[in-house]
Amino acid sequence: MYAAIQFSNLLVRFLLELCGLVALGYWGYHAVSGCPNRALMSVMIPLVMAVLWALLGSPNALFPLSSGWHWLLESVVFGFPVIALFLTGLTGFAWTYGLLVVINRWLMFVWNQS
Image 1 (tube, helix red, strand yellow):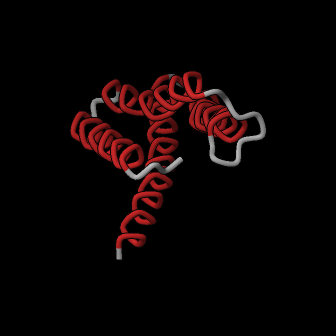
Image 2 (image 1 turned 120 degrees about the vertical axis):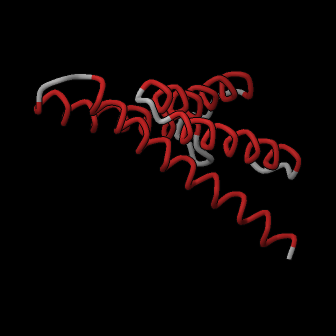
Image 3 (image 1 turned 90 degrees about the vertical axis):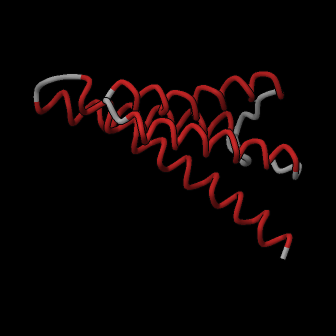
């Protein structure tokens, strides 16, 4: 039972990563005007963040960072979507997402999950 709860926390982590990418895409769409620019920004911003996370921060990263740098990258990857949601006026989503990220990270620390 305990292992299932810990696995659920990792699943929530993955869903938070996906939600963060969606939030960045939404912000990218609303940050610029013009159809081609909007399409480009709504795809490129989440893509850049996903590539950075995959290369440097994910559990299977090609170039894993030391703990201090990893913490900084993690703060950017999970914090920037909160800012993006605030900037687009979705304050309720921003608070909810931010709170879930903090709780999830705290549980990962307590359960010694990577």
